Length: 208
Image (cartoon, rainbow, N blue to C red; front, side):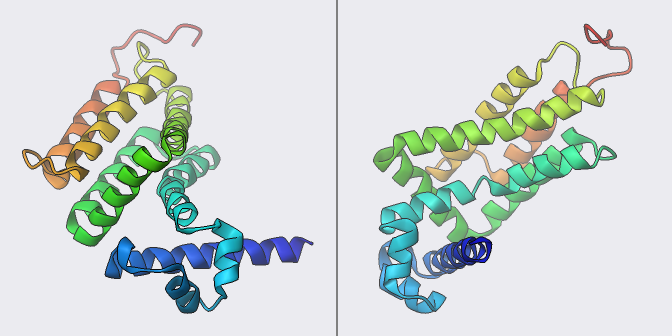
């Protein structure tokens, strides 16, 4: 049973990886489930079993976009030598720069976000909640390690951080040209994160 479950998870991840590659190379509308199945080395039935249809596969790819942040939160919980706020900024700015430098990935990300907003708004809201949950975990760790300014609660810091970042990303994905990711948005992320950081002369956090 355990091996069967592992094999199913491996098959699912392989299909997702191949689908993402084909979508990046050709565009979402130019790729069929049959083509994905052949390229992944599985039957079309296997693709249907895991995702039901193309819509299900696209939504699974949307969910996958949040995995790096979930993994970072997990890593920070284990390794208390890391500064949670430094790592959050490094992860976020790195991915924003990659997004701007890769037009194909920008195009796919735009498609996924707009597709979910129209076809599956609850799934989009769930993605946003999971994203904010991961950031909240990171700010709770920052609070625990004395890195978060005492006048910020982790939940409110995460709400503000996610609102700023996601708002700017969505504007940029939908054609905003008055700012860019690599310089402007990454600068905003660094500046805002700095405003959340504890300073030596801050009063002690209540209960500390």
